[in-house]
Image (cartoon, rainbow, N blue to C red):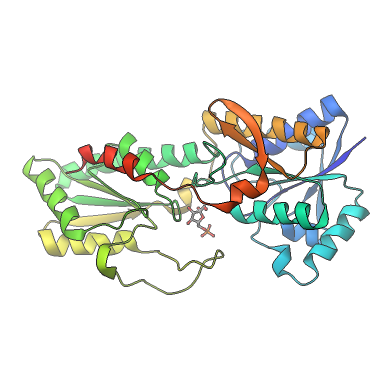
Length: 343
Ligand code: F6P
């Protein structure tokens, strides 16, 4: 019978454990597969660090955030002898196929290992940012939106009590999905996304009009959002693991600008990793579980180089390369649609 390696790479995300559990439950029960877990993403596959993975090992993990396998952003193609070591370890542990659960980076490695070295990989997409183009949704996103929405609900009442501006900075990297969805769900008065540079004077006009109507404004700003005309001085020029300049600090910066230009008091809340921690929502558990069930089915079918994806309500298989070729960002029409609530 088949032995399947499983690993989780990149930033953690609520629902990873639900995928692992579904893979192992179906694989062991229905196909008689054995499993080995590689620790800390590609790092463990390179170093040969493993954990035992069977049905008892995955008991009770469905509602748990994070990943029992650990994660890292190691890229074997950027590690000395990385690919050679992976091939050796797959042989040593007698692994017939590999399920890689991850985002752009992790899946990009899986695609190359399959295409260039014939290593039988199946991918499962993961990111709270929802920015992978081959799938309608990724698990983790709904949980992040839920947490951000609850935060916005809470900020409304404190903003109203003091008649202040509350700026909420949410995650999403280079995509505005979390900002757009939580901003609509939470009834924000301004939503700013990376896909469209914002005009600080326009933001201040919306804020002022909200005060005129005797309400306190909530401004949701995606961490990747940028003002027009390069007004913002980046806190630091350091690059993240994708080689992009880190765009941290936009919320703090914007609150100060709003205070100066409108004379109203403003406060900032940066939600940060709270959006990624803790138990997954019911939707994310459902999606992650179905991804897991379909990933092990693809392994059983020998359908490698593929990734599972959600299309409508169906789980389909697409070439991994398709998922990593371009990011899915917020369509301008979708953003315009939300504009009726601004101000
Ligand atoms: O991709 C998920 C994400 O949480 C982004 O929304 C965010 O920009 C980034 O990861 C943060 O990365 P790290 O956890 O390495 O600080």
